[in-house]
Image 1 (cartoon, rainbow, N blue to C red):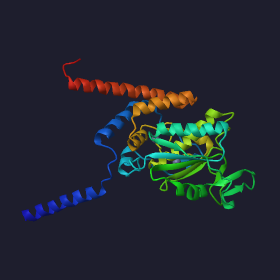
Image 2: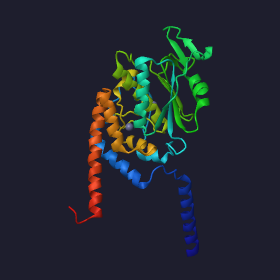
Image 3: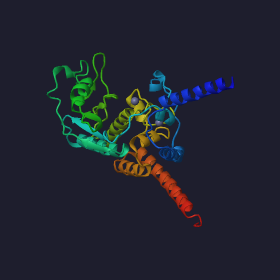
Image 4: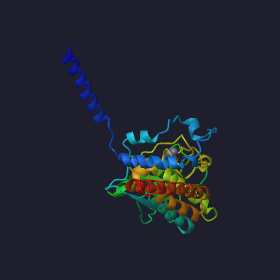
Length: 322
Ligand SMILES: [Zn+2]
Ligand SMILES: [Zn+2]
């Protein structure tokens, strides 16, 4: 009888190990790295505010979302930068002269810091030779629009390089995604690793440059964040909050909350101190006031944290030293 019980227990143990091995997700970061990014998140937590109450018409008023903790993210086998797929490609569609060409150049520069990877800006292509089915003049507004699904499937996917983590296109013209729709700000195919965003509705870069840049950066980083398997955030005010309207997305910040920040840090293997420092300098230079203040404060917190842990390591190596 005793032998039977031991055998049954043994079978449970083996089955348990097998089950755990089968369910265990791909490890995207070492235990040490996970500990480090958690301490970064903890160090900046006091700079963040909880998600404000939902207003009527907001994203959460019509979408029942449960959010995604850092722990859930790690268990979800997220898409990350890899040795083979480590570049972000930006494809401008249209002329992009003057101030709007600067918006594209700066978006590429910002994403390079934000995602800690190489960003390649392709040569502009024209939409003049798009087929008739991919262009229209909006029946009531008279605005010229491009079909977003055509850009994703017929323009970007065929030219996606092997080393691309993703390719995102920017257009000057307005976008519409097909029958029954008036317009979209942008659209992404997360599995297809392609996305397209229009700057048409982001304000006039000649008169409202900082606002147009801020909106373009928010959309580009939010949608690319989804490509890294990050879901919408409901915990804090965060760049990954869902958004139903221009008014709502203007209320969201350009930075990530303490629950979403560690996801990007592990997915891109970025060093937080350097990242915050460069983001602060960028935002200050381009008058993105709220983001500049946040990144500067976050940078100071992490500098202090790293200095302290460096001092602690020194003490451990040389316990007699004070
Ligand atoms: Zn989203
Ligand atoms: Zn968040």
